[in-house]
Length: 309
Figure 1 (cartoon, rainbow, N blue to C red):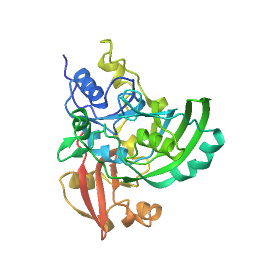
Figure 2 (figure 1 turned 180 degrees about the horizontal axis):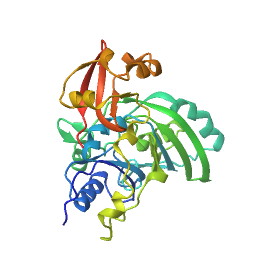
Figure 3 (figure 1 turned 180 degrees about the vertical axis):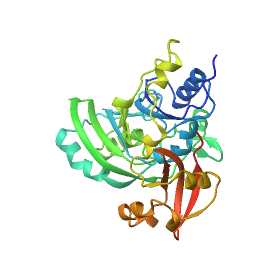
Figure 4 (figure 1 turned 90 degrees about the horizontal axis):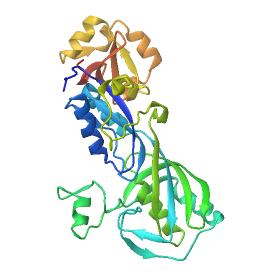
C-alpha cells in the first residue's frame, strides 16, 4: 500500500445501513493509509446519510461539527417498543393504539425547543467507564438520566399507513432520534420505534457533498475519495476569520501571543466583528489558509489549536 502524505480535509461520507461510524472511519483509514482520522457525530448502524470524516489536521476541528445542528428524516412504527428503540431490537411491549394525523399534529408542539429525553439503553454513552450498549447486551440494569436537547424543527412528512409515519427533524447536539420516536409514541398513548433514520445534513455539510462507499465490496481506491475531499475551512464557514500577514502567522504558529492592535489587518477585522471578544473561537487565516483556531482576550490574540499542513 502506498502511503499518501499530508492529507488534510473532510470526507463527507454517505454512510450505508449496516455499517457503524467507527467501521467507516477504520475502512477509510486503511484505504488512505492514514492514522489521524475521526468522525463528526455518530450514526447508528441502522441509519444512513451524512457522516463527516475528518482527516489529518481537520481532526482538530471535529468539535465544531459536533456542535452544529443536524437534519434527519425518520419513520416510526406504531404499536411496538423494542429494547434498542429501533427495528433491530427485541419487542418489549405492544399496543393496539394507532394515532390519527390530528392527534400527531396536536402533540408535536411538546417536542419543539429545549426538551428532555433519556438516551437509548443501546447507545455509546459511558456508565462507570463502560459503554451503555455493552452493559445492555449483558442484561445489566441501566437507568439513564434525562438530558436536555434542543429541537429546532419537527415536521410530519406523511402518514404512510396506520402503522407507519414519516417525520423530519432539525436538532442540536446530543439528540437521539430513536429516543424522540419512542417519546412521540408515548405522548400519543401508544408504543413506537424507528424503522428508518437518514441524516441529511450536519451543519453546512449536506447530501450533495457526500461520497458513497460500498463497504461490503472491496472496490475503491484512494483517488476516488481524495477528489471529493473538502478543505478544513469548510467546517468553519460560520466562524469569524482574522487575516494575518506572513510574519504574524509565523509567530502564531510558534505558539506566541500577539497584540491585536499590532496586526496589519486589525481594522478590517474589528469593523466586521465589533463584538469580537464575545466569540470563544476565531479562525486565523493567512494567504487564504487556516493557520490556527484562536481566542482574543483583552485584545491579546491567543492560539488555541495550531493547524499544521
